[in-house]
Amino acid sequence: MKRIMSIQDISCIGKCSCGVALPIISSMGIECAIVPTAVLSTHTMFSGFTFRDLTDDMVGIKEHWLSEGFKFDAIYSGYLGSTRQIDIVSDFFDTFGKGITKIVDPAMADNGKLYAGFDEDFALEMTRLCSKADIILPNISEASFILGEEYPGEDASIEHLQNLLIKLSKLGPKHTVITGVNLGDDKFGFIGYDSAENEFYSYSTKKVHMKSHGTGDVFASTFTGALTRGKNIYDALTIAADFTSECIADTYNDPEAVNYGVNFETQIPFLLKRLELI
Ligand code: PXL
Image 1 (cartoon, rainbow, N blue to C red):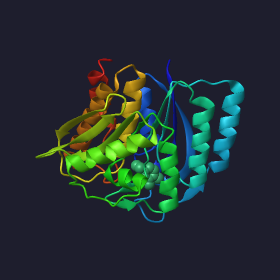
Image 2: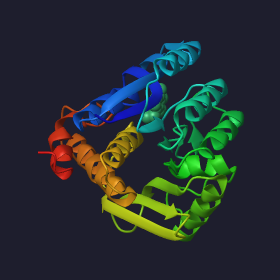
Image 3: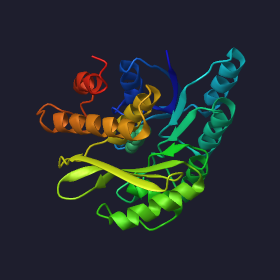
Image 4: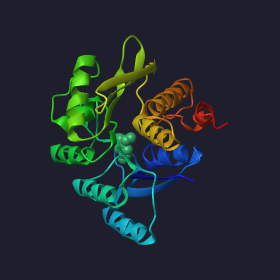
């Protein structure tokens, strides 16, 4: 069985981070080994959340896994809590990442604003981590923070996004993908750049007019799983986009849906069919 290492927090309520990576990657028939960076009572969109920092545990986990000789097929990092944690993830990349795909979702901002508790130094450190990744998956806000550029708004032009992609690729990743992009009338998707081929690509699904949390994590987990199952990058990205879109649509149509995450649980059968696993 393939094994993915997923480095991000545990938000006890929030349908994000490890709370989506574990079920989504496991449902795809892949072992998901988690490196929890922190335990929060909820994700940071709630007020008053508790936060237990697990930075020191991350180091212990790394040392133990190294002594046991564990191997991984991919490493995927998401929300991280501090610049020191970013350094430790960079260490995980050096220790376990040789010859395997390293994916960074620089989960730190949305709508032009850094999440609670993050500052420019954090963004700068995330830029360093992105430079060690093979594939990065920022949204428009994160891409702008990584490059230290002004946020162009959610309706940035394709030319502007292509420019960002080229600059991001100069940091090092072979594939840079900006997620959560408006791509025409009621179309929502991603735009990517393959630096080796000097080629752009994009894909969109029907836009559902609803603001939801954790969709980037659903997208990144699904993408990492599909890629690890042997799909090529474009196919893995389109599978992730289709699945995320189904999750959002189901949440939109569910009068009992919670407002802090999406209904990824009900759409697992869709994902498995989309992957031709059932
Ligand atoms: O979905 C990204 C995410 C992950 N983890 C925590 C968060 C967020 C976004 O707000 O707060 C703790």
